[in-house]
Length: 272
Image 1 (tube, rainbow, N blue to C red):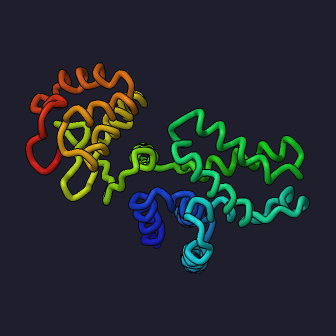
Image 2 (image 1 turned 90 degrees about the vertical axis):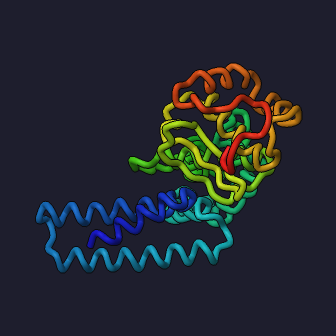
């Protein structure tokens, strides 16, 4: 019985984009197990409910793939599929989700940039003009939360998912394509970038202030374009993370980076 919950959590952890689609199903599965533990239902009934939920999950994943939308956009449409206000106004949730995804492509850093998020939200209001003002605001809030990854995902690994989401936003902005983004315990570094294109971030980076997170993320992502810490590298750092030098000094004096190198020359080893 616990395999469904475990499998859903693993999928959420492996691909944060699916979290908005799978998290509600995982929570329903957990409620079924809780009811079983509290003897509010029996084993056979719980197994039937979990089997139906597993089938619903497979159908939802297939529908998401067939829709041509991202997992997040499909999750937004799925969440709104029975919305009374949209139905009364004749607004198609799938069309709304598609439009929202197109708008997000215009503002790829909306998750980490307040100005882009404001403009993204403003763009979402246009197809909702038939709704009353309070309903427009409600639907926009829901779509933004789902598309930007704040759709109520409750997990001990949520900070890791947030770091991955922030990294993906910066990757789009920097026009780089990391093959893998990992978040794991790192005792001697805040981050690294391998020659194979794997960007690894320290799990406790999530507890640092956003500017320091951006400094580490941009630093590692730029190594996908430039292998050395030369003038071009430093110029790009200054363009994207103004005042990065102060954070570089912090990185260098941090005890975990006693073996770290300043932004001069090529870092040692495959990871940098």
